[in-house]
Length: 87
Ligand SMILES: [Zn+2]
Image 1 (tube, rainbow, N blue to C red):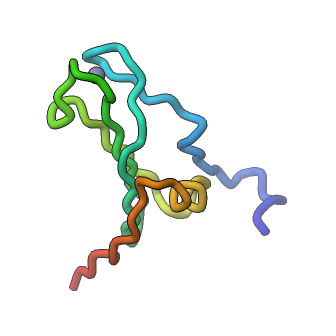
Image 2 (image 1 turned 180 degrees about the horizontal axis):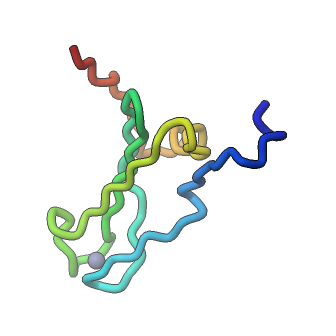
């Protein structure tokens, strides 16, 4: 497919670490959402220290460079929600 185009950038979010600036711990993906133009990964701290409403991290990846979609869909936190239809 696109393997012979070295200029094509892809992002593998499973290769990244998301660290919390509050508790200094690593956050984990708890939710994955597909939008028409981007994929959204929601990270939260899994501890008693941080209030997710304050420390939650939302990572947006443009769909065309997201290399993690298939794997994200296989994980248990993913529930296939209908894509929002905007007029
Ligand atoms: Zn934290």
